[in-house]
Image (cartoon, rainbow, N blue to C red; front, side, top):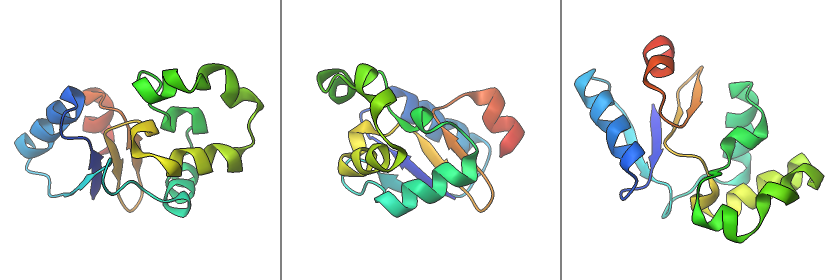
Length: 115
């Protein structure tokens, strides 16, 4: 299980605490330093069944600075994936990738069900 997190993110800290309490083993990846590339994001998105918008950190500073709320709708999926791959701070975190599941953000009930 790969867990993409940002060390200063309180939601990530809660998620890691929950994983540790559940005894889950995981590989921790700093999303700012080692963000997923376009292919990894495309694979995760396709595996997840989620809309691509769910992979964006919509509450992040960079998202707001770039005015992405208004721009995403007119962008192609390829353009959105390239944008996500350009900076880990645009990616919703934490993001968990397992063999058969991809989760974005920390919703404890969803994590309990899927992990």
